[in-house]
Structures are given as C-alpha cells and as structure tokens.
Amino acid sequence: MVKLGVTGVPGTGKTTVSATFSERFGFELIEVNKIALEFKVDVYKDSDLIDIDKLQGKLSNILERESDIILEGHLLCNMSLPLDYLFVLRCSPDVLKARLVSKGWSMSKIMTNIEAEELDYCLINAEENYENIYQIDTTYKSPDEVVDEMISIMEGRSVGDVVDWSEHLFNRL
Image (tube, rainbow, N blue to C red; front, side, top):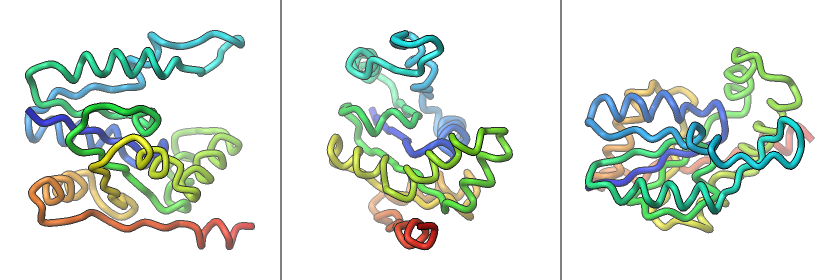
C-alpha cells in the first residue's frame, strides 16, 4: 500500500492535483482541512487555530488502513506522518497572487501566502518532518502534468523541481 501526501501553500493546486491523482489511480483521497475542523481550538471567536497533535493522531490512524491513500492539505508540512512520498507543490508568486485574487481572498491573506511561498515555508517545515520530499512547480503545468511528474518521481525517473522564489522576494523589498 502506498501512502502519499500533497502539501503547499493555498493556491498551488493541491486539491485539484490530489483529486486528479485519486481518480486516475484509485487512491483514497483524504482532505486534511476537512478533518482539521474537528480539532479547531476556539481560543478566540472565529479562530482558525488547530490542535496539530490531535490532527496528526487522527491522520496516523487513517494511514493504518490497508489501502492506497493520498492526503492533501497545507497543514501536512507541520506534522510528521508515515508517508512514502510528500509532494510540496510550488507556484510562482505572481501566478499564485492571481489564483488567490480569483478566489476572492483579501489582499492581506494573499500577501501572507505569497510571503510563505517566497520563504519556502512548506518546504522548510516538511524537511524537518519527512524524508522523501519532492517539490513540483505547478506554475505552468496542468493537473494531469503534475500527476505525471508525481508518477515519474515515484518510478525514479525524476527528482522533481528545484524551486527558489527568493529573488522575487528581494525584488519586492
């Protein structure tokens, strides 16, 4: 049984790519954000604080199932789970901004996520928690192309992409 994770900042294509992978290969798709709502900590009214330890425990139990599973969610990079592969989806900050604007996000929230992408937030956290980590730049790739890249990585034909948006950050400052 194969256990995969797909993470990245919002707007990189996690949900669409994971659904495409699940449909093509029959993997059980687990949307981490939906499960995370069970572990919301209401310290402040309308907070989005999640008890990561409890969420990690629940996901660990799910991964014990005798089936191929793909977990999808930006919170995965903050946990340590028994995954065979963790794919960190990346996207050019300019394209990411356009994607998040089209979703109707506030400029404040958009800038927070662009900065997270520029600073490699998901990658750095994933490197602290996992071993088999692969970046895929989704900027100009269709979901099917990203899934094909995931398969190439799993078959040892690719090592993924090397992504560095630091120049974008420095140009913005």
